[in-house]
Length: 120
Length: 115
Image (cartoon, rainbow over all chains, first blue to last red; front, side, top):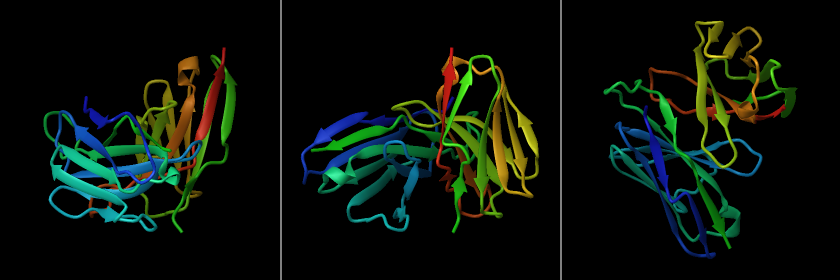
């Protein structure tokens, strides 16, 4: 089956520093990936749509200069939380929409295991 | 605005019983719906999906029912097991065609299975 990985799985950082989270589709290509944020006991909230070779599309209320997204290849998207503050502490989850091929259903989204960010 | 919501935030059942988790959606343009299971500290796991041209779809121990008239979606789990304990989310998508592949998630229902 299609697998999406995230790295790191958890990170603790000091306030004011930047943190990069990677999202990789391991055995399929994904032109489109999505980044979600989930606070404790809440649902997943879409932050942005990451498109390979073009700028990300951010949801209303999400600061693009604070959450930098780079979709460098068909298997990798990164989310950088710049100048992180305690209120940015959350569970960040990515998903990858399969381009199809090699038995992976076209258009189906596969989720990563999430990254727990704690900002002190 | 667009939203996908749930009637019950928590559900507690006995092992072996059937579970029913409900979801209401408000976007009549949605034509594809998915149920996800999320265990603590993990990402969502696909359970079953259904397109708007169907009323019912069955999987292994799970059934999804779609009532487009009242914009209601439900997930039925047969013979619930302790391993089914998790938070369950419904999500809506406008499906293939066009550029909108975004998912909107409901609030989630915490299912607890008592042994």
